[in-house]
Image 1: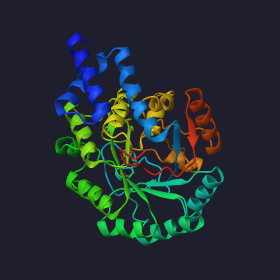
Image 2 (image 1 turned 90 degrees about the vertical axis):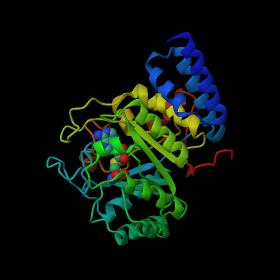
Image 3 (image 1 turned 30 degrees about the vertical axis):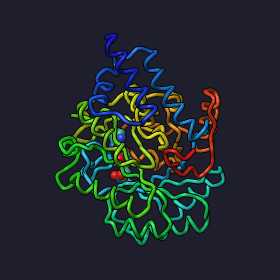
Length: 359
Ligand code: SAH
């Protein structure tokens, strides 16, 4: 990397770490030079990111129990193995009892956040979802329920919030119209996604957004726009993970994203949004066996072990090669040991988002 760029890079990171902002040009410069960065500069970025995460969350990493409730989906996103046109997908739907059993087993392990994720499955109507949320909350009043079930109307989101849901994960996927429309069919406009995010926040949910790293067709400008979008949205959570091709989708032959870029972006997002809840996602672990350590050392502070029953877990194939070997007890044990080795530890707290400035 040119000396001139090294100095610029150092300046941008220093300013990001202090003021948590950067111009589009500065973000572009970071993204453009990412691959030429020396070890020292990368370590500077990561240590600043860690310092910010530690300021808010200490050396604690929150755990969330992930329950993949359905692999049926009415949507046809070009990247996702659950898309309705995928005739090779194995479809399943957990029963209410199965979901409650997953929650129970998570509770026994001390988990206090349950993430219900799935395709947009018409079986799971709002009354059915509200009912299960109420049951989870009744059995565990202090736990947090997070939903990740795609786009709904404002009144549906409001009804689920009323039933007790606390948080909602809905990645914006791409902030630029051009890229969004290359990843989604026409009947899924970006405007609807943005409205959904606005609705969720105005109802009172803790909102999570994010995007896949290394999406087909993306440019550096798109990624800079995604970072600016997230900064302006100021969500409580940001989920990013590498794009991993799923063979039965239209984008199945595209290259995957990289662990390297994901970790780099995790650090930049931690600096832009210092108090955000930032998971080391399963997609990252799928591509990089050392993903947990690398992500945490770049400012991530959440891990989501799966509570989904094994057979369903394999069928929930949004991408190929999904890491899913161990049962939940083993997963948590392994996560604990691995974190310990790098000076971090599991926290079983509910782990609500903190506001920037509130330590
Ligand atoms: N139906 C819900 C949950 C979908 S899965 C929703 O639409 O929000 C959650 C996330 O997985 C998506 O937001 C997407 O960013 C990610 N995902 C989907 N396909 C993927 C792939 N091939 N590689 C990596 N991540 C993928």
